[in-house]
Image (cartoon, rainbow, N blue to C red; front, side):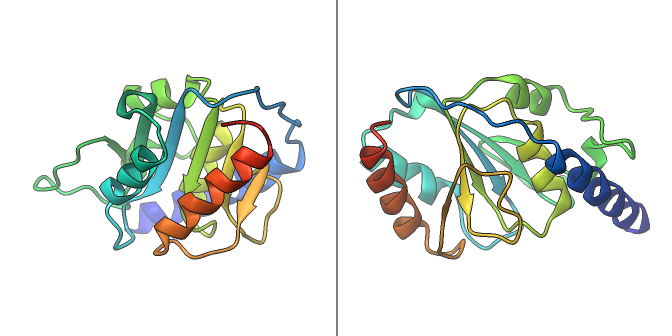
Amino acid sequence: MFLNIIKSFSLKNKVSKLLSNLPVSHPGDSIYSIGIIFDGNISLNIDSIVEELLKHGIEEKQINVLIFKDKINKKDNFKFDAVSYKDINLSGVIINSKAEQFLNFQFDLLINYHDFEKAPLVYLSYMSKANFKVGFTSKDKKLNQFMINTNTNNYQLFVDELFKYLTILNKK
């Protein structure tokens, strides 16, 4: 527990330094691959979001999810790859090969489905090589190129608004 607090503080400092030098990314023309960084600590099930994406014509094979949970219990069973504080060392190095693979993949769209107060989630989002990042409205406006003003429990509105604006931006 105490180590997680130290890691969170360390990551928060690292993220604020990294975000101050964030390069401008240039999104591609269309969306073929979608990554989702999801907060496994919220009461919403990730399958609900994936189902909404499927309703909008996205194929399941195009969607890849990385779940962050503060602590993963042995009885936790995730359909998607999951990471926790123990998968990030004090210097911010990701020590989970599946998480590294996710972060190094150049998604056309990354959905940051989390509250921006959690340093590990912001750090994972920053480390992603995605072309276009979308998330919730937050204090820090540097990480996402597009933000939707709703809460994490209203996933249907989030996905509907996302696709509405992707159509306007000619990305869908």
